Amino acid sequence: MPDEAKSPTSAGEHAAPAAPAKPAGPVPTPWESPLVSDLHKRYGSGISEASTYLGQNYFVVDSSIVADVLSVLKDEKNFNYCVDITAVHYPQREKQFDVLWILYSYDTNERIRVKTMIADGQSIPSSINIWPTANWLEREVYDMFGIHFDGHPDMKRILLPEGWKGHPLRKDYGIIQQDNEWVQINLGIESGQ
Amino acid sequence: MTDTTKYLSHLELGEPDKTFLDSNELIINMGPQHPATHGVLRVILKLDGEKVLGTECVIGYLHRGVEKIAENRTYTMFNPYVDRMDYVAAVSNGLGYCEAVEKLLNIEAPPRANYIRVILTELNRMASHMLWLGTHALDIGAITPLFYTFRDREEILKIFEKYCGARLTTHAFRIGGCLYETYDGFENDVKKFVKFVTPKIDEYEQLLTTNRIWVERTKGIGVISAADCRALGVTGPVLRASGVKWDLRKAKPYAAYSEFDFDIPTAQNGDTYDRYLVRMQEMRQSLRIIDQAVNRIPEGPIMAKVPKVIKPAVGEIYHSIEAPKGELGYFIVSDGSTQPYRVRVRPPSFVNLQALDLMVRGALVSDVIAVIGTLDIVLGEVDR
Image (cartoon, rainbow over all chains, first blue to last red; front, side, top):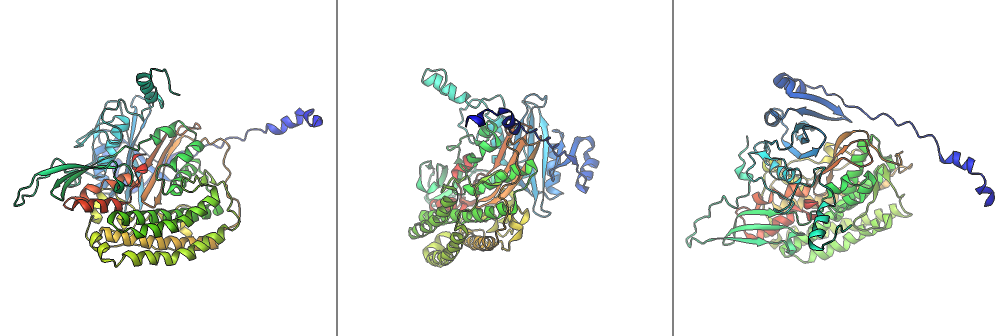
C-alpha cells in the first residue's frame, strides 16, 4: 500500500488523459425543396431562413405573415395535423420569444417546424381556425409564457390556477420562487429550501 | 378555414332542447375526486336531465412543472422525471426522451440495446392496455376483467422488476442505450410470458366482445370521425379506431421497429366499441413484435459511446414515438451547456382529452364515464 501511495506521478499521468477534441457539432444546412421555393417566391424575405438540422426541416417566418403561411401550409400543402405549438424564451434577445408550430402531413409523411420570433408583449394570430387542436396548445403557451394569441375565443390559463402570478417557463421565473413566496407569507421564514 | 364552433366547449353556447317539461339546465361537477376520472380530472357538465349539452375540462391538478424542472437539471438527471408523466407506460416515456437526446447528440444506440428497448416498450404497451381494459370495464360496470388483467399485468411488472429493479417508474433506459444487460433467463421469461398471455387475451375477449351489456354500453357511444380526429390532433388507438391507418412505428420508424413484421389494426366506426377492438388487436400485435424480437436479440454492446458529460451542440430537435396513448413527442433545445435550454413534452393524453367535449355532446351522463375510459388518459401526463 505505501509503495503505491509513493508513485503519484504515474497515477497522475493516467488519471489525466488529454481531453478528446470536441467534435464540431452538426450545422444547419439550407433546406431546398419545392415547398420552400414556392414560399420564397410568395413571401420573399418574409421567410428568413429555411434549414435542415439533423435531418429535420424548419423555417423561420416573420411574425407579420405567420398566419398566412400557416393557412397556406394547411390548405395548399396538406399539413393537416398540427402536432404541437410551443415557445422558447430568450431574454437577452430583442425579440424574446420563439413560437413554434410542429406540423405533419398525413399524405406525405413529412414533418416540419415553423418558427417565428416575437417581442415581449407582442401578440400573434391564433391558428385555431386552421387547426382546432390549437385551442388547448395555445392556452398552454399563454399559461407558461404569457404570449397572447389574437382571435382565440378562450384565452385563459389551462394548467395553473387562475390567480397564479407570472408565467413559469419564462427564464426570469426562478424555480423556487413560488415556494419561497409561499413560505414567506405562510410560515414567516425566508426560504423553505 | 375550419368552422371552430364545433370544436369549442359549448358550456356557455349551447341551447337546451325544449322537452315537453321544458326542464332547466343543470351545471354539475364531475370530479376532481371521482374514481372514474382516472386521476384528478374535473369535468364541468351542463345537463338537460341526463343529456349532456356541453362540458369543460378543468385540468392542472397534477401539474408539477416537469418542463421547468428539465431546464434546471442536466440531461441525465432529467431522465427519471419523464417516467412520472405517463406512469403506467413509463418505459415509453423513457424511450422517447433517450432517443430525442441521442438524436440531438447525433449518436445511435447499438442494435442490441434497440432490441431490448423494443421488447420492454412493447411489454409496457401491453401493461398499459391491460390496465386500460380493466379500469375501463370496471367504470362501465364489468368488475371481472379487472382481476384478470391485473393478474396478467403482474407478470409484465415482474419482468421489469427483475430487469431493472422497479415495477412502474422503471428508468429502464439511459441516453445512448441501456444501463443493464438482460438478466439470466430474460429471454426465457419473455417467451414464457408470450405463451402464457396469448390465450389470456382470448379470455378477456370472451368476457366482453359479445357480452350484450358491454356491446350496449359501448357501441355507437363517443363517436368521433377521422376528420375530427385530424382536426383535433388526436392520435393513437383513438385515431386508428376512426379508420386512419397511422402509427409512428411504421410512419417514422424508431428503435428497431423497422425490422419487425406487424400490422396496424384499425376499425371504421370510431366508437367506444371499436376502440376496444383496436386495443385488443394491438396487444396481439405487440406479442408478435415481442416474439420476433426475443428470438433474435443480437449480440454486442448495449451502450453507445456517450461522453461522460452530455453537452449537445447548440440546436433543437423534435422526436416522437408511438406511446400506448398516441404520439408522444419531445422537443429539446440545447444551448450547448449541460442542461437543456428547453424541453417541451407533447403529451398524447393532453391533446386527446380535447376531444372529450365533442364526443360526449348529446350523450348521457353515464356515457361520459365510458368516453373518459375509452380515451385512455393519464392525468399525470395531461398535467405534467
